[in-house]
Length: 159
Image (cartoon, rainbow, N blue to C red; front, side, top):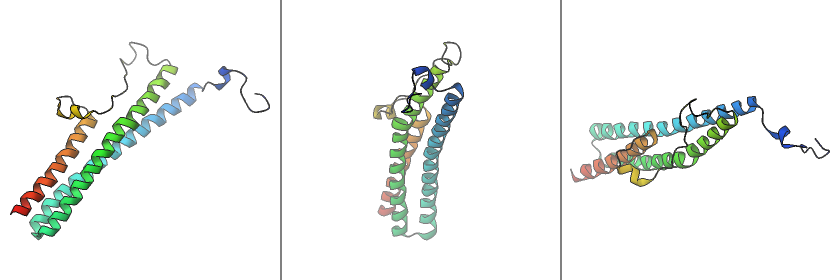
């Protein structure tokens, strides 16, 4: 190292195997935390959907039902946006990092773990396909809850 604190060659700048393993662990933990946030938003929406029905049946008040319906629609819409962002930005980036670390550790040999690929960003035509993965399932559920909230409130208003 020179007086400016710069390394003299690239070998000294390469992270150790222990550092790479810790980085990979952190990337996986961040990926799981992100996925957990996505599931939690869907859980909250499901509770709101059940609450919408319960409030409507218990109170029989069009204003209360409408407000909970609007809350469900808004929360499901934002949950949808969070899920798409997590898939397209966070998850894709995490897997780019994980695959890079696995390459540096020599873990991507052809027969070691199979063909590891980064996830593709979500594209709206996939919504209508038969393709299925966790993110696509959650996106479909968010949209189903948006539709449920809209339909429930409309039919309640027509009653």
